[in-house]
Image (cartoon, rainbow, N blue to C red; front, top):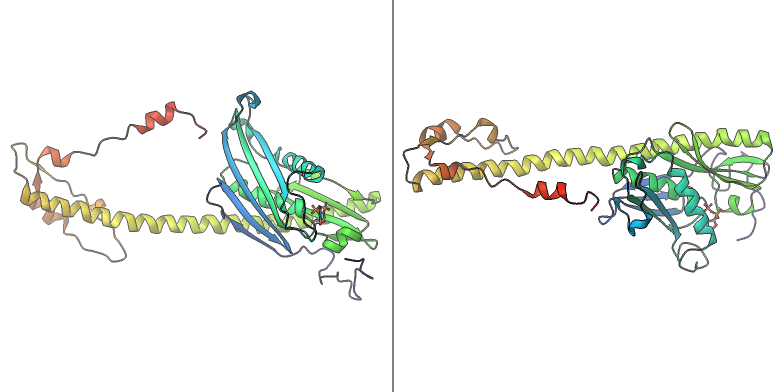
Length: 327
Ligand code: UDP
């Protein structure tokens, strides 16, 4: 790819038609991996990134544990097929550096002290790269962390700002990144505290100040998209849970009542006759609205103690308490 002749058209719009303060379209899907505790798939322009989070879980080998806090590990990786020229698989100098600074971008927000001796693993995989992959990976990672239920002070949002043909632009595209004068990836908390800043190229002090204002606007826009993605995931979850409860509970109460009726015909009534309690609560209003005459059941049905017994209490809870908390 060669350097474009000009980066702006006569209307001041960029190569892909964006304004200088406009980010590329972003799409976020939450909870896309069933094996991970939390996950996210993010598309940002032509970038495609997957993030998976595991933990908090006990850290092995134990000598690496910190008794007062969890440690966070972060891996940024580019798939071999993510760029035009195949990348050699495995870590390299660039990915090691990006992994380190990205991990540090989350340090101020993750409440690691709640999980002593544990580890939280964040994996980010760039499936398709088109400039801004480290910021895309951070945006995906923060959603995967939230999806995993990791307690955080807030979300982290990241975006690059740069200079192209003497103009400051938000969220550099591939050509702008390759042939621009400066590239400044930034991550910040939702309160606007900067947790990552790197700079490639040169800016004057005034340009730097202006760039920081611009990138703040970008991060705010991304934060809104992130919040929306999480909100829609958990709104949907709530609805599903309610629907599930209705579906599960309705047949349960039917079965209980059916069994009770069977008992009436089969069981020899003992001296300690007790009325089987068929509480109204047990009859759940389903969409099909099956009418069960509970009074009739109360009057007619009797049973001995055996039939009234509660199921064995699950003693597993004790085992869980005694066992290890992290998987
Ligand atoms: N890139 C590439 N091969 C590499 C590294 C990067 O083709 O080994 C491309 C990729 O599209 C990447 C862009 O160059 O998004 C800019 O890379 P940079 O190191 O600036 O990181 P990024 O902007 O992706 O965070």
